[in-house]
Length: 244
Image (cartoon, rainbow, N blue to C red; front, side):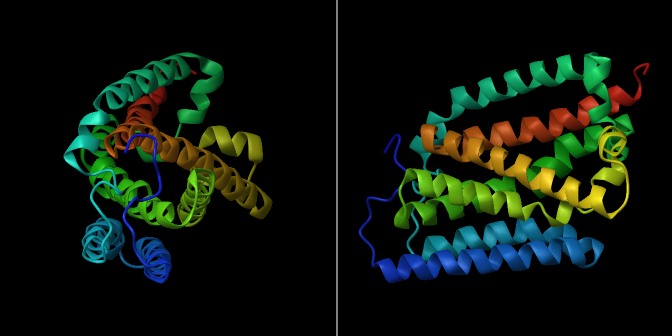
């Protein structure tokens, strides 16, 4: 149903609570495996967890519609998906073109055009965007919607998404010239970088969650999430090759 977060499927509250707790445990364990184990387990942890959790919650009764994955929901998100990509492309293009904001795109990870392109077309969608959207705006938001109203569902989902990025932001300031120039280096700078990342990704999670709620579709937040990461990566590669 358009504009609805909670499920209209009658299920015992205890089962919904149990499913939500199971989802949270899987998210925590997946995050730890992804960031504190070997290379290959780190790469595969999030995609494997996403597929497994979608399958498990579906068996437990979470509907495709509740995850934004039914055919009707996917069709509903097409216009928003296209609009999201166009808007992000325009904003990133302007930001990279302006010297004052270009410095924030100077990430060491994407100083090569070839690496940025590979990341934008393969790594980002398969390892990050699709799995995270399935986990957070699909499974988690669907489970939260069975227990809470719209505001609480979106707020809790956004907070979870922000905390999910604590591990990945541990070296944030050291790998970005713009941020290190503002925050400096050392422990305090690292803490500031982590807090900033959590706030930023929580806000992004709120927008993505609202988009999922507004369109009833997972397609729209997938498109926005991909465009932010992938176009940002291409923008970083371009920024490195522009005069400072």
